[in-house]
Each structure stands twice: as C-alpha cells, then as structure tokens.
Image 1 (cartoon, helix red, strand yellow):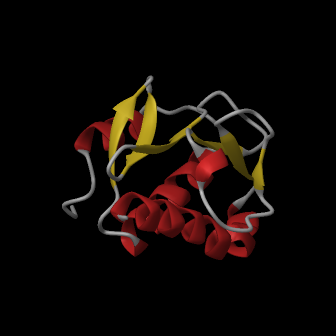
Image 2 (cartoon, helix red, strand yellow):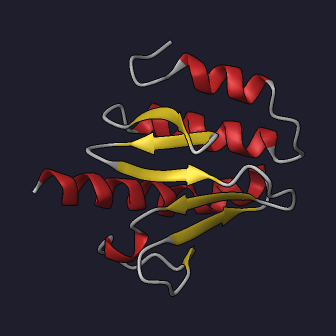
Length: 121
C-alpha cells in the first residue's frame, strides 16, 4: 500500500454495492498512482481526495456514472470541459464507464494538478 492510500477507503470500497464500483476504484487508483502528493480519507461517508485541503469527494449514490464533486471547483484555473456546474463553488466531474475514464483521464488528472499548483502558491 502506497503512503497516500488510506485503509478506511479500502474498507469502504469493499462494502460499496453499486454498479459504478469498478469505475470509482479505477478513478481512485489513477489519481493516487499519478499524484503521490494527493491523499485520501473518508469524509461525509465517502472517499475524499485531499491536498492542502479537500479536493473532491465521490457521490456514492449515483448508479449511472461515477460522480466526483470538486468542492471548490469554481476556483480551479484552466479549461476543463467535463468539470460541470455553475454554482458558487462546487463542480462535478462524471465518468460513465471504464472506457469513458480512458477518454477523460488526462483532463481529470489535469484538474488535480491545477488544484495542487494553486495550493502550492
């Protein structure tokens, strides 16, 4: 287990009964493998990515796509067409399948990198 992984998230995933479980698990692995500075925890009863603050949490009840809510997505600089929403702060990134993740992975990782760069300033 890498230093940025949390056993509580492993336990959460083990009990996660949802058709999107493989997609959620794949997103988790991709983010944590590519960005060792990002860690995770269970917050709000859901896996949450963390780097100098909460980055994004999965919305566990979604069954038609994996939904990752970026808590302060509105302030992340960059052009991210799949970061959706028009609220004051939060933005959502949706992934419908493992194939869809392959097509969106670069953008997803770019969002995380933009967050980390912003927090490092």
